[in-house]
Amino acid sequence: MDTAAAYAEALRRGALDPILVKLYRSVDIAAQRDRYLDLLACFESRVGPGPAALILAPGRTELGGNHTDHNLGVVLAAAVHFDCLAVARPSDGNMVRIQSKGFDEEIVVDVSDLAPRSGEKDTSMALIRGVAAGLAESGRKVAGFDACVDGEVPMGAGLSSSAAFEILVGRIFSELFNDGECTALELAVAGRAAENDYFGKPCGLMDQLSCAAQGILSIDFADPARPAMHEVDFDFGRTGYRLAVVDTGGSHADLTPDYAAIPDEMGRAARALGREHARGLTVEAVLDNASRIREAAGDRGVLRLIHFIEETDRAAEQAEVLAAGRMEDFLDLVRRSGDSSWRLLQNCISATDPLDQPIPLALTLTERFLHGQGACRIQGGGFAGTIQAYVPEDRFTAYTAFMEELFGRGAVMPLKVRRPGFERIALDMLDGEGGA
Image 1 (cartoon, rainbow, N blue to C red):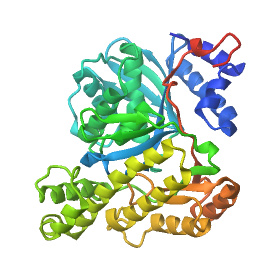
Image 2 (image 1 turned 90 degrees about the vertical axis):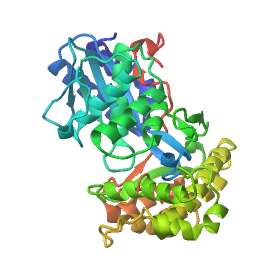
Image 3 (image 1 turned 30 degrees about the horizontal axis):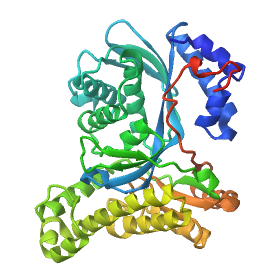
Image 4 (image 1 turned 60 degrees about the vertical axis):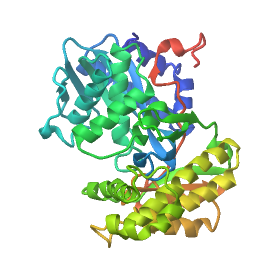
């Protein structure tokens, strides 16, 4: 295992810069170098000098397949450069101690006791205990460690900050105690179980799997135990468009009932047609049986079921056109996805506060700014948070100024896709001249 001091020395002389260039936007390299050095200094101060592992887990953005994973559908997702970073070392015993940057209180969890605790719901402790339990159940070793963590995945921005943290914790267990052999699917399943059963938030598997596997992934959840994944080789940086999300400032607080209603209504609608899940149904079958579905799941259940069916097909097509390099066809599918999410899925406005509509406002402003160029859609779970936009490069500066006039400085966040291969940074990844 490398040491914290050796990492710091390599960072100061620029030896890790080639790796940082691959991980982050080129304009961010100096800031990332300082970030890494700060975290290493924190680790040495709190844990002490000596061996250390540098471990990463990225956030993700959903490119297609809005609310399809929980009903065995297809999604298209990409890991992004915003990430969670940890410096970690095994400790004696079973106590996990994590100091998170920006928080004074240390997180402490005894992983010899992996039963859920009701008092830990909605806490980081629940996620750590849940991830440990999931990995232990799959036969992996879990034990105590000390770590300092810095999360740069914006919270509430639809980039899966909680999933990134879950995958980071799982990857620490994997790298420190299991020779790095935990698969992306193992880490994702443990993370989802932690969020569902320990943290108390319903979610599918897309967020965790995208963060764990990285790259641009087309994921088919027809077999939820073994989702079919394939990487789509595509570089948005060469298209003339900038991929970005816009944080509208809406709060996700108290939105769990809105999120939970989507899979619940889709499930009730599917069961009205004799299916446990919506996958495999056709729009024709839904229309032919609309009265029965309305009785079981209401009008919105009919609309959400139609969205699922068409969105699953659309997400699969998005992967195909991207792989073929057909950007304009991809953008057309993005527009159709956004329209379906707004009209059929109806996850752009929360019914609990109908006067608060930052998502429709951001979408409307973006559409009018683009005048038919590029595309935009809801980002992630919806109801609050962010939209996603594909903006022509030559208009991106003007778009940023336009949107941040209303939503505040820093609201527009350009994204870089994170490729796999840098889950753990080791100094032996460098060549003789200090390159990667």
